[in-house]
Image (tube, rainbow, N blue to C red; front, side, top):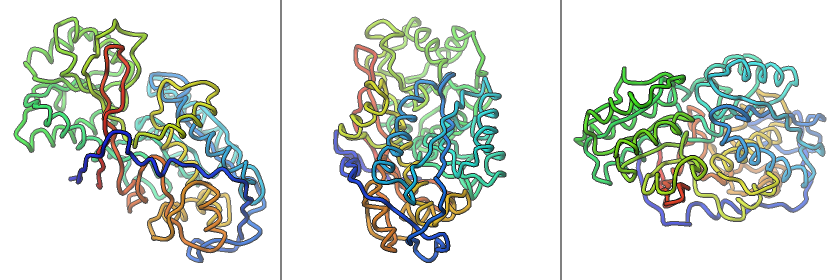
Length: 423
């Protein structure tokens, strides 16, 4: 069970969001091992290559822009400071799409393996990752996801990491939010997917452990990702007379919400998750979502960090979900390569826990400050913009924030507060 503390609006890890963008070249010694503390003067002599496997198309495409911007922002910060070993970090972006188009992620992984990247940032979908992670890790490449939350991925491989907390953290926060709102009988609409069922299981445990009931949505009630009969599915859950309804879905949400509202279910008793807590201002009539709430793992990024993401994107983003986690993932990979003195997957994997702070050390923020400490032979505790703690034995964040969002009359989600949890 996680331990929770509510933090006030606007205070979510703002200190970690200040970025050090001053110029400073960083170099490292190829013969220095992770246990030696890193540092040196030569490095690998080759540019560090990092791939991304993020949703540019498909049902999670709304997460693509902030995630890509996060990766690019880290690259910009590092390269403006002289890169790694005096060479610019190279980013190769590819599309993960979704589980309805599995061939796209497979083709992207094949491309990135052929490019000999040290690490791949992605995927956004846990199910997509489970389809490709064996190929990635068999090639000796680190996969580090900014958004995967399925508990099935905890400790999956020594080469798999994530900067998003597992569903044990988000599910606990979401379940307690629902209970605090006075919901005793909860209906759950979810699709048959590792992400959805994993999160459902955690929420169900929290609700039932506190005397509540899951009226619909237990094992066997899931709908298929290509379902189209949402009117019938909505009637099934409403027939169980729930006090509140949790929707765990992606694009299907755009069909589910109108069916629920059309049937008279109150919008302020609706709950969403990170897969569908999105801007619906262009999809529904004003007021359709008023009072609905959703959760997204990660601290609420500070305004200056959001402005940097907007700049990388070339225009204001509609959502900043997982932008900070993508930035952190890219930054951690580069710091691990610098510490280990080489740009291969195994070196990155060996050093990721240490640069995240798992071994203790000096706290640091951004590339310049952290790289300077590594060059001086010091251990570091990277202060993640997303607020996650050092990697644990399962390569999951040892602690994290989960943001709570509420919808206004314009059907746009607004950050309300964040809860902090330690798994």
